[in-house]
Image (cartoon, rainbow, N blue to C red; front, side):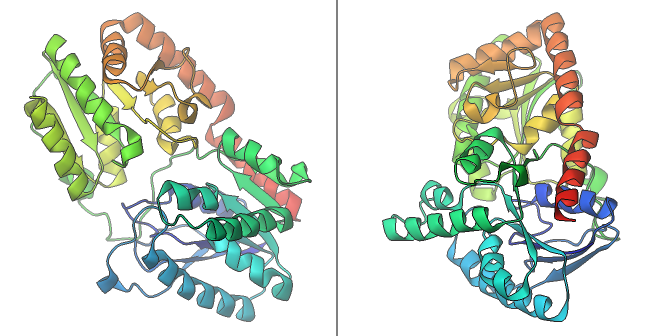
Length: 391
């Protein structure tokens, strides 16, 4: 099979890196699909057998693409559409696999080129407009809602990534057999092209971490909904009761790190909190593997974070907030679930550090859950069934 995959993201980049679409493409290639992969100019090239990465111009002077809707993304998407149109004229594809808003372009061109369409839906785009305060226009919301519903109904197959989104889509489409819940649950090392990752494996992994310190590690973005303020405030209580703990926060922009560093200083815990900034995947994994406890303090949202799957497969105790974003996967048997409040987060962190027997039981349960529901073999079988539907 030949496919055109479209990802309107900085592929592959530390800023909002689309790990999920990378793994989708990787597994499809393993199953024999030959792929043209159309994406933004920003990012690093990766090695995936049978995949040809095609980029629009970088437009570097306009800056980097940020998470969520933005005027820059609208500008870049115009060039994605033009390049997509050219590729469809020159090539015959068995299907087009459209990620996020690129599905609108595929929806418009589908009647002319007669390809089968996969809608890889990671969020409801009308909801994104509201969540990121892009616009308060009810008309714009209705237009996007109408387009999204049309794409869902006309697609040959739909992929959603968590139960909440799965249920949302099932209330719109009639043919449920074309709908696949494929969680973003695998995390193979990303294979960057030669020369792009040399020396980075040890470059940032340091430091000034005292010997014997127990590390509480968060790795992810530092957007407001991630609850980093809750985590920092809770750590003040933890550090007051445990002398040998440190908090490592991996990720974030310069402005975000400055903001949360000031918060740590206000709490009097600056010497026990390390902000690493964004790091290569290999370095991030080293921090994670060195942790005594992993944490996901997210305070809002419904989509399950990709990092949750890696956390439950890590063999390390996990403390996470008891919100729907997490409880679609987590329960009290596999993690320390706490209310999204500093005092409750502190209680969960202390319990995970002080009760080795309870922590190890949760770890064993988490590993079993991952193996039974989210492992690479399970993921690959789901993608295989999707491709069989398209044949």
